View (cartoon, rainbow, N blue to C red):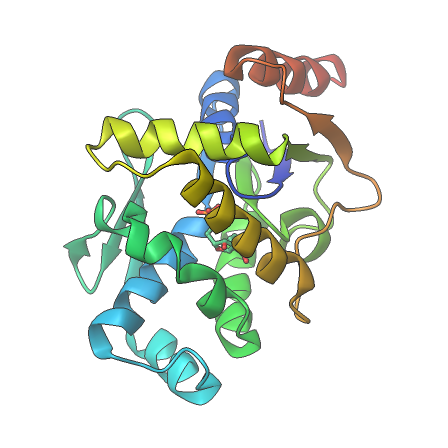
Length: 222
Ligand code: DC
């Protein structure tokens, strides 16, 4: 199947888990575009680059080698200059800084062109913030997943807790609120549902229900 499926939405809406499961069920590749911005954020933190210096961020983005491989369970394995950083890019320090890097237009231009190159081949489920609007506006299937702020914070908290990182719910709510604000208000490709996207509030839904909902729509369209 050469379908292109775009899944956008705010932090903690369950996009990555859902997108990966949908890809697995339909035999498609999965690309986690947020992981790409996270890897650049890690590189910037390591290099001590000022997040307000667009030129320095762009130079850094051009100079690093970013490689994405698909793991045995369909997950994305992210290599930064040959080093597997898949775990490190999920740490709280990256969570709280990634929006500042992702709002840089020069960084986005480089990332979007890499993502479009992958999208052109088709047979892919991509998740992010601007997939349906900018990266693959031609995708036949576009979904915008959301959930209440509190529910999204709870989901992120559970993910971090499983890794032994303990934050409080109010801390998590505040962090997600800040990220939502920066992601939605930035000038370049802000978080936005495409006009032709199917909007899905997953607050009361399980991951399995969301996956089934999407897979059924794709399969029924054949
Ligand atoms: O989905 P995530 O939490 O891994 O995304 C990390 C950050 O990257 C998030 O703050 C928004 C940004 N992002 C983006 O601007 N565009 C994308 N296509 C994907 C993520």
